[in-house]
Image (cartoon, rainbow, N blue to C red; front, side):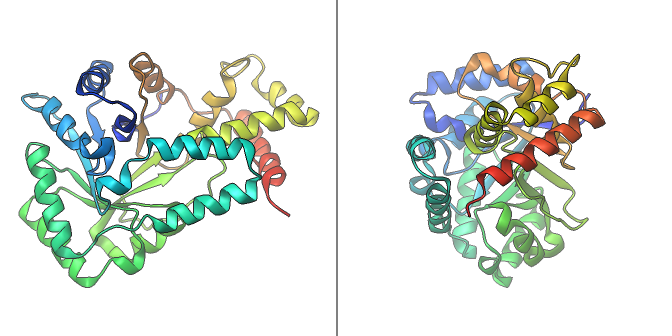
Length: 313
């Protein structure tokens, strides 16, 4: 069984219009066994921290809470944007959607001046019942991590306002941000889908939180399923490797991609959904056994075929 700690993500609260539905989702996460939660001021239209804090109030069991700093709620409400991206992926060429994604990500700049960070942390502490186990710099880039910011973060750690400091940014910016933060940074959030390039991290980053195991919005899964449909050799290789295992048949490929992502040297994994009935199912999916060598090789081969097929000329 996987030893990776599951963390329930609250970014999906963006898609829930009322506190009742959000409460039902958090109830389901708790009943399923989640005791670690990830949130941010920008999630749920600015309401996710308050919802999570109210939910956790009075619970005596040990709970780990991560939140972020840098993005305001107006920048972070992403449900509508994700729907548009999903539509764009279906109707536009790959090179166009990649360019649009890069432009969107480059515009997501946060506020990382020390006073703004201090104010954000104080607000989060009030909403979360006085606990921030992990504080993450949200969509930060190395040049935004100033000496003054590092000094303020060190003071927050020293006072016990936060338990650890990390980065939650795009993979292509993560390594540089970690280097700039030095040994103060001990946590990193990383996309660990099979089509995502691995991010080298120094040993002082002891908490590595994986997300996007199927690719953003399931993009890796869809691309690989398309290859299985169009490429007979790929299809034969995959079916031969999966035969007689729990990865054979419907649902086998997504389960294998989850297992492959968990093998990316992660300590924690983000799990999220807007559907109450999927909470326990998704938790079980990240608790399975590692892939056998043959299946791991088949996943790598299919990923390589997919990358070759989607790379623009």
